[in-house]
Image (cartoon, rainbow, N blue to C red; front, side, top):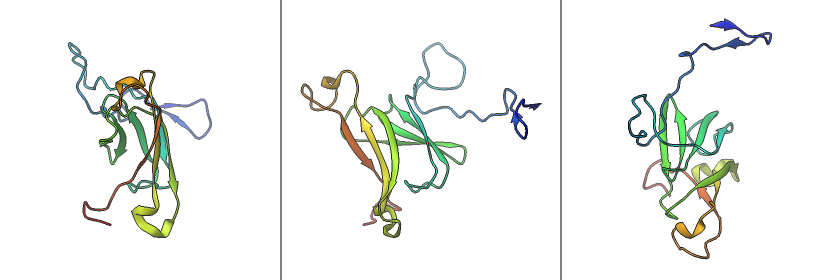
Length: 141
């Protein structure tokens, strides 16, 4: 560790910052750990809007058609099954009713790309807004 030019802060040396690999296959002929995933956007859930806890960082999983969270040092790949071809451009959390449990909170993600005719539905497709929620268990209602 070395000192930072800013008072009260420290500078991390290489190897001190945890860098877990994003999910997905690695580029062929690359031997370093990692994946070919290229996240477009990152965001931190400061208010536990999805239910994974406060201050959980997220990234778009464009090649995974997902949102990816980093929780307790592990990547959680939250795949969006519909529409096929989900390509998140941005997202943000929202708590509508803090007393309603998982039903009152979630993440809203806008999805769209430069070739919407490749997304499920084909020609004439328009960008979509998707609400993502996590149930505490599969049978919760």
